[in-house]
Length: 517
Ligand code: NAD
Image (cartoon, rainbow, N blue to C red; front, side, top):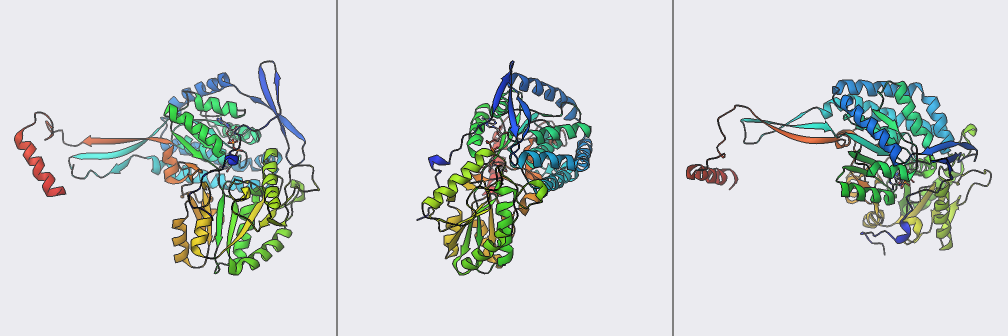
């Protein structure tokens, strides 16, 4: 019987440091990057150590002195130029993303679209969101009150490999708008996209030291987190690494945003628009080879439409083309070699224990690179690893349910709480169900679109993280809040200041009774 409160099994923990081919020349360590689609070498990158990280942080601290005092409108103007430069250099970025991720061109373009939409929001709405905000003074009519949103200092942004542009540029733009300077540490699995972003920022005229990009692995990220020269960390990555970073930040009392893993449920009720639901499940589960934190993973379908859903999904998945970039496919390769073994382990484990693989279920036989065939798994038991560990690959688990209550229980049967999807034509039911699913974000009759709506905050609950990015809440998370009270009339003293007297005390007692009693 599925439980609602979920405890992570031991095997769910994944090591935080990916396996890399590392070599040393003199005192400098390097790693090699190979194309995941063709297995051709793409280049070598330095692993910057804590001394080099410290030097970059010193430059960022120096640049903070001038960047943080720029008017909001000037910082917005810089970001606008940065966005326009990204658009100008779009094809250069697509080339880098496709080469190092094995993505399709369309998946790379979606990254650029998402980044530009979020950057535009930040430039347009940022100055209003970060301006001093007046607050009500309650009884204290002789005062004024407001909140200031002040730059925190140097923000360390650490990003993963699955969306190397969005998950770097998104937090970077917000942190810069809030007046911080930023040091980015992109994933060692996709180092070139982050470095390209730094190059584009320089072309756009972002002043030196305001935004810098490091090259390195987990040890470089760790140096950024541990340094007393970073004032905040925004981390996107696995739950296991997030926990380690959270512990360090807790010890150092350093503000931190943790955007972590997911295992999104999709609930398809009997009255759903079935064809749209199937299309949404396929795109939401298989685009970017399923390597998306909000990927549609566990699809719970009402038993009365289960067979029709599965039949339509099988027909449509069979028509999807997978392949190399120049073959113009809908699905590319996976990005991280280790990830393909995790996907294969989950599918093999489910198969061994009696699940049925109705499509895919293996590496693509025609390519030497890391291609995993789009896969549908059915006939599960909820104890299977594939039903509770993050698979992060092109796999849809399709499971029937009988009642609304059961669907909600199954959806919540996970340690994660990032995204969820509810499909029904009955809006009353959709909203009722949505409120009972423990996730930070949710779509009704849609897939992923919440992430592109810049006015919606994004973040997880449970093991999916702490804090929010994007929107007003996300932007303000990159600022220190300062609450200010201003006296208006300059009286000699307030009633409650020294010296205390019996009369004043009695007056206060009366006021308490009248106002609050
Ligand atoms: P990861 O945790 O292995 O690595 C992420 C980044 O952290 C990399 O840059 C890595 O070098 C760095 N790192 C590793 N160890 C570190 C340490 N001890 N200190 C500081 N930095 C360290 O994650 P990944 O495999 O790159 O990314 C995939 C994971 O990211 C998945 O779990 C996915 O769900 C999650 N993710 C979450 C979101 C979200 O918004 N919630 C978005 C995308 C991906």
